[in-house]
Amino acid sequence: MMNRRVFVGAAAALASIPSVALAGSQKKTYVLALDGSGSVRTENIKNVISTVIEVLQSERAFELHAWSFDTRVWNHHIYTQDNLDQLRNYVLYGGGGTILKPNWEFIQSLNLKPDHIFFATDGYFCDEWVNYNPNIPVTFMIYEDHHNVPPGVNTFHVIERHA
Image: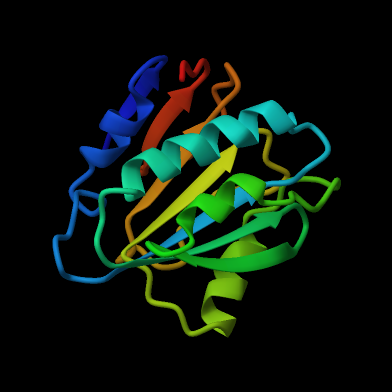
């Protein structure tokens, strides 16, 4: 487990996580849960999306399930190597508090078995972190200088991003 502050090169740090490392021809499934709560700044979400695109654009075969969340899950889209660039136009929904549990319920409702789950958040949670499936690696990409970091998961503090 890592707890790093990544100012530049966030994509390289993210790609260094074993379950994220390029899979070659093996198809991987990822989840990107974007915090859509009222405290989130759109600029931060765009930086996280750019980082994810940078990491995944080299992969040959993947499926990325992206959605926004606050007290529920919103605006689910599926991206592959063929339409990944459309992720740049993702529309964030929400505006309420930040509750993590609906993400796990949504994953279960889709019967998803992701290789990795990424939570992009400012770290202001309304509920406690519970890893409902410890067999799935989880990374929190926290984009505010906030220290509400869930224990036992990979964490990157993406505070500043340079193109």
